[in-house]
Image (cartoon, rainbow, N blue to C red; front, side, top):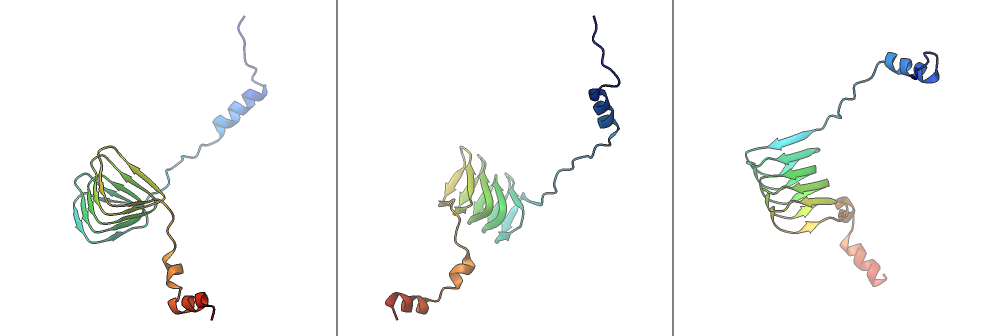
Length: 138
């Protein structure tokens, strides 16, 4: 015996409702990405993702939210979220980011810092003379 679905059942009403309801297209969130595929000299500061292609070379530091390196960098890399070095990457400089991923074959000459650095504005507020007075007990 064949089982039939009732047209008045709760499931049938839900199917009709979902078929009649227009679906919204989920557009991907816009991402701001800077891609470099040639020689660039000087420091780069960008609020978004910086992708250095396999033929790209940067002679200077890079500061961004996310940094992806497939080429050569001669400078420090500082990211707010993550740094990723692919197998073809060659970096001469320090890396600073909460998350760092280095693929097998990538070359790095420098230090890696994954901790959160102190905010530079906080360090600028310290006055050496007042600190010395407090330590001396004056």
